[in-house]
Length: 268
Image (cartoon, rainbow, N blue to C red; front, side, top):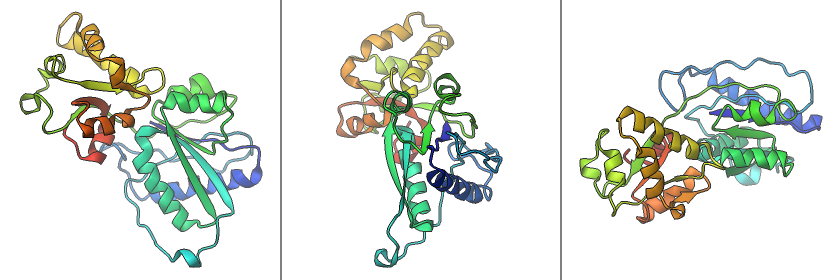
């Protein structure tokens, strides 16, 4: 996953965005663990930044924060607003980041908006969204669509995995293994879903998983069978949109990132 900084042509907002970035880096340097998977180191980010042009910088996310709560009536009113446009899979960690940062910097208000990563890119390019911070879940989108006009610097700092998440009472869950998961999904009574490949990396990575599974398990036609067994009603714009359907029992299995499965406490 990639976290990107986009600073508008305002030196004032630029300085606030950089302050937000540096605040995260100072906290992250105390930890060498990957926020999504253990054992991965996060690279240090070079500084200082020399130009107020539109710049992108990778952010380092820290999984835990010490939050300092103070009386709202004693806090100064925010005078600066930073817009954070991010992938849906980063909603939980970014909310914690925003809360911690605002406690440390009460003069800054952070506004978060989530979409699929491809939709985030379109918001910037097509709709001129005033993003100060953009967090995407596919590193390749930055050089393909945003550089050099919208971004000129990128750092990959974390990895994730794709998993099959389900409820304990999902049909076939008791007998689910790494060898028969595809057979379980193809049962007529089972409903499974994934995010839209046209708007979310998790969606096109799901299709890639099916193609790889077809080769790994030596089952010709498996990917096409899974595509046919997943109706359009089970495909949503971003992967976190599938969570409500799983909780409501409308879906039995969903393809989603490991970090999201762990955040919500579901088996996978």
